[in-house]
Amino acid sequence: MTLFDKIWDKHVVKQIEGGPSVFYIDRHFIHEVTSPQAFDGLRKRGIPLARPAQTIATADHNVPTWDQHLPIKEALSRLQVEKLTENCKAFGVELYGLGHPYQGIVHVIGPELGITQPGMTIVCGDSHTSTHGAFGAIAFGIGTSEVEMVFATQCLMQNKPKQMRISIEGELGKGVSSKDIILYVIAQISASGATGYFVEYAGSAIRSLSMEARMTICNMSIEMGARGGLIAPDDTTFEYLKGRKFAPAGAEWDQKLAEWRQLNSDADAQFDHEIHIRAEDIQPMVTYGTNPGMGIPVTGTIPGEELLEEKERPSFRKALDYMGLQSGNAIKGQKIDYVFIGSCTNSRIEDLRQVAAFVQGRRKADGVEVWIVPGSKQVEAQAQEEGLHLIFEQAGFQLRQPGCSACLGMNEDKIPAGKYCISTSNRNFEGRQGQGARTLLASPLSAAAAAVTGVVTDVRELLG
Image 1 (cartoon, rainbow, N blue to C red):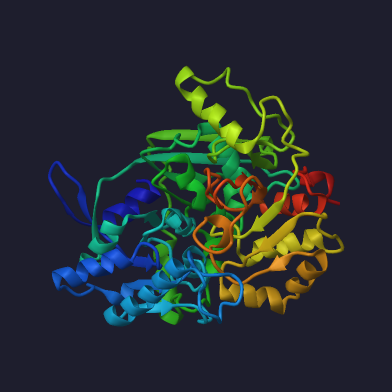
Image 2 (image 1 turned 120 degrees about the vertical axis):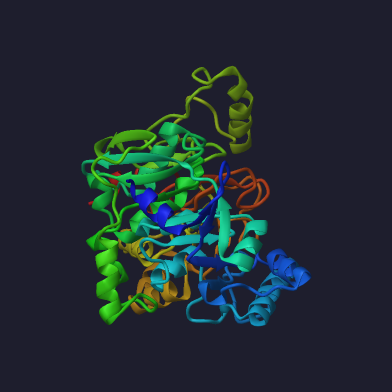
């Protein structure tokens, strides 16, 4: 059996003959965007929330990252956050709203609080729920109607997906991070290359990663079309979880640990598709187009359309036109206007420490605006305790307050039309960071390098 098989089978309540499974959900995370209609659905049907203790709420998508103690300026954002507060109070859901010490991006707070644990099934009305798979959990995003289904029953109707294993063996080179790994994988197989699959990441390069780095990889599984991604838990996982607020303790910890150690794919487990990658082949990556599969090494040139099928060429040309870039040009040296370091992909304390260590003693380039947005109040507090905020301040970077921020154009943090932003987030779609904004995805180190040079830079040239 695969790791996925073992977790899946344990959570099937009923298999409908010739149809989907009734699938039990252990943890349900909610936020202000995809929950209001689901709560209204319960009201209209006159039914309660089935298991409120297994639902955890936070405000993240619409929150400002300046002056969070003041009323939210944007009317729609303010309404959605207010509705979340009202609904959680009415239905008995634990809410980590603005001002709460546990508030933050939903996929950051779950792991850091120890709510996310191996062997669980986890859902949220957000596509990047796959982040939690880094702990050896089946975690995936759901739509608003499915949010209501989990509210009402603590179950979902699910068809079992196919399974893919991506094995990455070897040692990563200098300046290469987990963000580069996943951008490389997506560039290799395309933004639709894992459609219909749940992906397990394996191999020595994956096992060598920290939990926060593993979360970055699982976070972007959805960007290659996968239903989700997961990594077998190991001592790195257990060490991360031990002692966290909602993690098991005492005798319960010992019992859970024994269970978690069984969570791995058997040696003879069969996958529907296998991919093998050498870690040594991965360089710092950057995207040039309008989907995460349009990525190249920082030393590369923007490809031409001659290798594409005829039907793919119009969208390729449209992407380059939107980005204001041309085939055959080097991506290195491309001017940058904004740098965004944050999002559920790269806003954890490890990301901020890495950036601070790199920029210490350096200063941002003239004409570049740099936003550092921590993923949670806990990350923000830790950054301040460690003095990272002082390093950022001296470098001319803005350390803002927690939220999804400029990952998506749903709050006050938007990139102006026509401006180039190198971003540690997960999507570079047209208008994703603001109408007309041009997004280049990269790692926190590569983003920091662009911040101090003002252009897309090979960070390896600046590392001692």
